[in-house]
Amino acid sequence: MHEISIVRNVFDTLQETYPDKFDQITKVQMEAGLLSNIQPILIQNAFEALILEEPGLADIELEVVQLPIIAHCDACGQDFEVVRHRFVCACGTPSKKIVQGEELQISKVEFFGN
Image (spheres, rainbow, N blue to C red):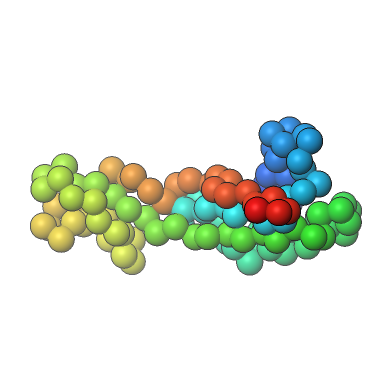
């Protein structure tokens, strides 16, 4: 289950980034594009497993926001949402130019008192 290593890496990154404020983190928001192969429920389950190893994380809320796949059409210049794996713009032109949907990133960190 690679989700446990992902969650562990997220909290290791936060520890390195906020060494003086890590214990004040109340909420972490992650963004996962549909093409990242990350399922929010599996990330939540991995987080619960990590809490068993590191009880100090129990007061932190983890939220995973799944982002849709957005592609760009060079023919008409528009961005469009990929629905049912159809990488075809409303203008009828196919496009493989993905502008959103592959990312996995920490998007927001909230601290006690914010």
